[in-house]
Image (cartoon, one colour):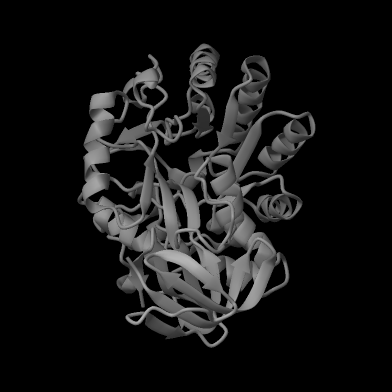
Length: 422
C-alpha cells in the first residue's frame, strides 16, 4: 500500500478547498494540512498548488469486454479511466455474452477481478439479450450496480413497467437509454453491435424526450428509482425539471460533448458521430442551464471505443460512439470553469459527489483523515493539446482532437495504490 506525502496542494474536503499537505500511510489518509508523521519510505510529491480531488466517478462507460476486446479491454479502459482521474466507473452491458444472467455476468466479473485498474461496477441488462422481449434474470444478479439496456430503448410500456416493478422489489435502479424506434429515420444496421443508419440525421429530439416522458409516468406508478442516460435535448431538460419539482425519483446525466459542442461544430468525420447526436445550440444552452440549476445531476462520458476501421467509414457509415474518459475534466474545466459558466466546486459535484451518492458508491466524504485514499491530482494551469495518440484507451475517436485545454492529470490513487502517474 502507498506511503506518500502530497505537499503544497489545494485539497478538496467536506468543507471545500483547503491548502496544505496530505499524507498517505499504508494507503490511508493519515493526516491533512498539518504535515504530521511521514513514513520513512514515503514518496514525496511537491504539487506546487495543484489540486487534489476525490477520484471521479463515471456511471456510463463501455469497456467492451467480454465480446469486443478488439475495441477496448477492461485493462485498457480502466487505464484510461485512471489517466482521466476516475477511480470508479460503471460498465454498460453491450457485451457478448450480455450480462442477463448470473452465469453471463460472472464472465465480466472475473475479468474485472483480474484486470481492472480502478473499481468497476457492472450493469446487468433489463431484458434478455437487450432484445426488449423478456426480462433478464434480474433477481440472480445482486452484483449489478443497476439495470440498463443501454444502446436500445425499451419499446413497450408493459415491458418497462414490469422491469421497474422488479427493480423496485430488488432495491435497484433502472438506467434508461431513451429512444423511440418508430421515430427514427433510416432503420437499423447491425455491425458488431446495435447501431443506427444515417447517424445524426436520423435521430430526432422527440425519439429521446418522448420516451423520458413515458417513463416518468411509469416511475410515478411503480415507485422505481430511475436514471436517464446521456440527455441531449432542451425538451428532456424541461420534462425532467418538472418531474423533479413533482417529487419523482429521477436523476439524469449528460456528456461533455453535449455541453461544449452543437450541430454547428459537426464535421464530416466519424469522431463526431455518437448517439444521441450533437443537437442545436438551443439544446446545448439548455443542457448548460440544467447543470447550473441542478436538473442534470452528473457528468458521464459515455466512453464508447471502436476500432479504427469501424470509425473510418465516414460520418454516415461509421459506428456510433466516441471516447471521453481521458478528456472529460480538462474539457469541462477549460470551457465551463475557466470561462465562469460554472464553479470548480460544481464540476466536482457532478463528476464525484452526485454520481457517488445516487449510485451508492460509498465515497461521499471527500478526502478526510482515516479514509482509504481514492483521489486524483490535477495541474489546472498546464495547457496542452488533446492528442488521441497519447490515450491509454484503445479508442481514438474524440470530437475534442486538437483542442487546447488546461487540466493535466498528474496522479490517481485508487484503494490506496497508484493507478496512474504522469
